[in-house]
Length: 340
Ligand code: CP3
Image (cartoon, rainbow, N blue to C red):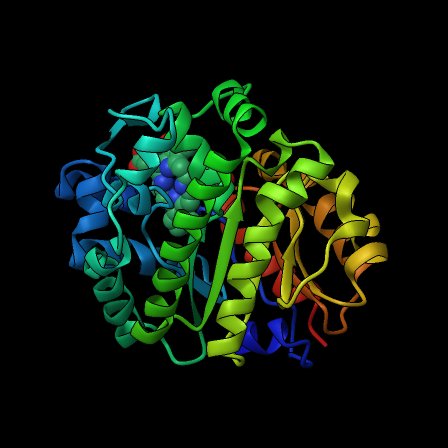
């Protein structure tokens, strides 16, 4: 698999590409399957239809990897927090974590209730072509904790930060519980057939440097170490979004560092490119305009070169209204321009 070789810094015939949120609303095929399923969570729970939407971007775009179709929030859901995806507004938890007792009340061994995810992985792996990789994933403990405390997406993370500074032990206790679940969750994803795993730390940028390393990166590293201990051959990808300023302190036992669009690729290469394969980082909005898209591709390839050490991706998730023809062109363009 070209994608897996690239994660291990082996030479490949071209630079592989996949895109965060490659399955989604910009594809009419996705919108149709979601309608058949009912709502978004029903789609996550439906093995047959989740398999279908996982495979759609591989077939339509010819990307080098599929990513499991699910959501990072199914873990808190199974830890006992009822979840709804409100159309146009995003995820909302009906109950939130406000104190130590709430953390004690969370259900243990949530990862044992996520068979629908493992079944989707096995079903995708059985249908996916052998040269394409399947990526499993989870949210980072910190990013999941913010959703569990705020109850929804937030601009300020005020409640989460209040808990962190007022009561750091409670925050650590929550993060530790989530981390234990995620270790079991990723191991089972691998055992079901995932060829690589990725941890999304979407709200990394909410934290100042010292707090970031203590309350987020430390747990990400712990998860990566655990996976590498059990499955050393499975690539681990870590994606902390929005922490360009902290790159020189990044370390740990993992394979690929996901670079967001706010971090100049040259800067990431300088600090981390020697130690980790870099994945990223085209600004997704460039796909609205083919010329800007191509200039962005040329710039990234110009920096990362055609040698091993780079996986092409967007610098964050695909937007729901990106023109699909440009997404298809992007994959062709990257394959063609990086041919060895
Ligand atoms: O990348 C993929 O194609 C795989 C599937 C995937 C989804 N969510 C599907 C989804 C993955 C890897 C995620 C991760 C995820 N989910 C993250 C981390 C990545 C990131 O974007 O930072 C986060 C923060 C979430 C939480 C989440 N899920 C939000 C905030 C939303 C609402 C925003 C939106 O785009 O509507 C979701 C819903 C969601 N997850 C959708 C998809 C395809 C859209 C649901 C729909 O309307 O069909």
